[in-house]
Length: 281
Image (tube, rainbow, N blue to C red; front, top):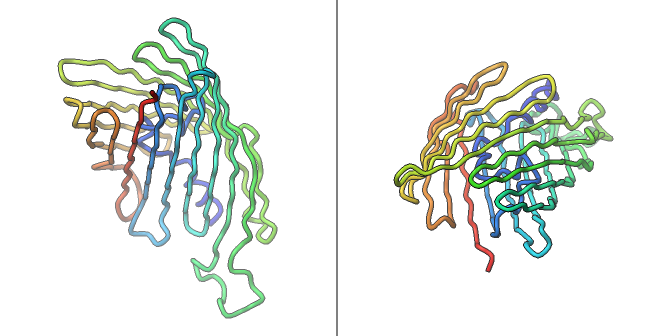
């Protein structure tokens, strides 16, 4: 029961993905001539002890002389007794044709899992024979993606966890896990109306059994105010988010989910992202 609950938490992606497309597609890293730093944090059902939380730090840069983009993602996922830490290196090659660019990229990830049964107090902490914490176990996996950029439109498709590698726990065999493979597809477009830039996007994800669809629109008002919303459809539940934030000189963007509905469980669900971009000279 515990293992099934933990696996279920893995399929919750960041809702503010459109600020950091490389989290769903390695080909989206370094596609613009800038260095970019991102911090994202998400928490669900905050009134529950040891509630799910997700923290991510990432970096990307375009290597213009090599027609390439590089990136790095460090992620920590906590859900109950489970902690998963992922480090991922991204690389892509960019084929430029006039005002169009085709990008092919890959990501190599090192995944580390550990469990702390003492959090649920299922064992006697004074018994030296019983194991309170599992040793850390690791596995490699791969991502692959393609992106296409044309004027103000970006689209991509990617496969995450291509190898579907297994992480074996030496002490708790029932907690062995298989990395779920996901197929992602998205399209994002940007256009300007007066002093407002409108950025609609559509995101689809499937593990070949379940399908998730996310329709998002973000309005950038006078290069200062960010406001928008997303509607996410899954086979189980539908979710509505209202997003807001600020931007400064196109270099700093701070966004958060101001309101969300549809998530089951006590407590709040919130997320924020901070992006800092530095143009290459």
